[in-house]
Amino acid sequence: MISGQVGFGGTLDKLSPNGEMTLIDGEAFAPGLGVRLENLFGTSSWTPDGVVEVEGRMESEGEAAATGRIEIGSIANPNLDLEVHLEEFRALDRRDVSAKLSGDFTIQGPYTSTVVTGDLFVDEGTLFVEEFQRAANVVDLLASIETTQIDLSTVLEDSNRFLENVRMENTTLTVQRNSWIRSARMNVELDGQLD
Image 1 (spheres, one colour):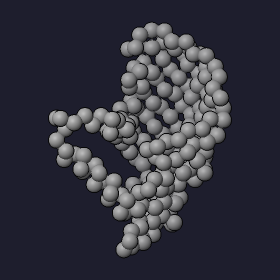
Image 2 (tube, helix red, strand yellow):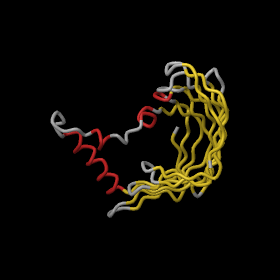
Image 3 (cartoon, rainbow, N blue to C red):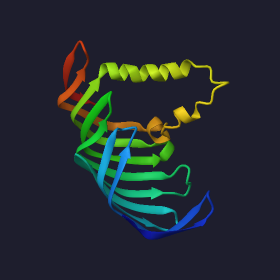
C-alpha cells in the first residue's frame, strides 16, 4: 500500500517537489537479479529544494535497510547519498549466479557514476560456470550482429545505467565458506578477502 501526497513544481531541469510518501507491505520482483523482494517498507519526505529524505527496508530471505537522501535537481541524473545495511540478504538468484550478502556500505554520487564504499560479505554464493559462459556467449553473439538493419532496442532495453557505471572504491569484499564455483568438472569452495 502506498499512501501520501507529493506535489511537483519547477521545471524538468530543476524540480521543486513537496510532500511525503509511505510504502507499507510492498512486494516486487527484480528480474535482472532474479529475486523477489517482500515486506517492503519505506518513507520519503520531499522538499522544494529537490531533496528527498528516504528510509526503507525489505526482505529477500534476509533483510536490507537503507537511509539517506536523494537530490533530484536533475531528474535524469539524481545525486545519491545512502547508507545500506544487509543481513544475509538474497541479492542474486539467477541460473548463472546466486548470492546472499551481508555488510554495511554507502552509495554516493550521481546516478550515472555512483561510488560504493564499505565492507561486503558473501555469506553464501555459487557461480555456475557453464551458465555464466552461456550468458557471456549471448552477449558476444549480440555484439557481433550487424545492427544497421535490425532494431535491437527491445532486446537490449534491460540495461541499467546505474549498474553499468557503478564503481567500488575502498571496499572490502569477503567471501566466506559455503561460496562455490561449480561446473561439470569442478567444485571449488571459496574463502578469502578482496580489497
